[in-house]
Image (cartoon, rainbow, N blue to C red; front, side, top):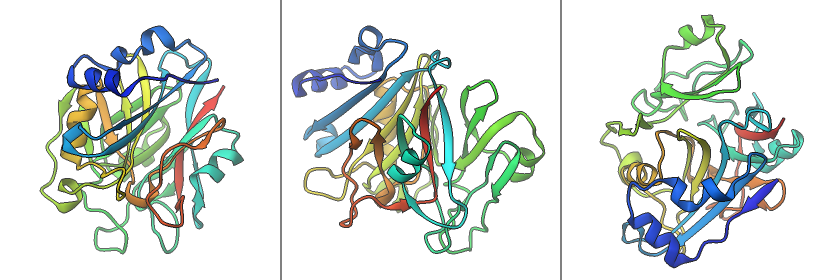
Length: 276
């Protein structure tokens, strides 16, 4: 069940400027039962002195008997996030990692159930990202836990049998509520649409930040680090952004505002919230 919490702009502004009070301040503790996914959309023209539209989907990490995360992918073709999600009858979805826009497939290491889907592309290859960007990993364990960690080598994950799924992406933004040093690049410093995965002590949170429009400017990753820390994220990682940034729910369809003029961009892989 998707539960949308209606919050006025004034309350959102007061919550955000309370810096460090955490996502519990958004009434998730009170409003979010074990069997619900919470959807919140924040619209503001004051955050970082810019117009922002930020969408969040959250569920309790202790709700493993109700929800779990899965990856869905295509190795050689591109599909919209919504189509991936509908094909798996998912409850909700966000776009996943960086991909080859010509041939499809992830440009960073990706495995599911000990089967390698893609290896990390050479940084010189078209569409590849540098190691300073792809420095993190999303690990889904066989016990339905979600771990955001410093990336290890392709070979390490290939030989390890501990993980149910692994996707390398990045850059890492927060680990143990500490900001991770970011590379000095335009990709980091300029404002773009963004997609994030965040975990707290109690919640798993999908976050999209819209951009490249009059209504939403997007965030730099430096700004994103501060926002994620302020709303209570403990560990957080960047996923593919720009025109790929998409959030979808079964009840409402695409709930953010993708920046491509053609609408939702086809991608290679997505992260799903599944009803167990």
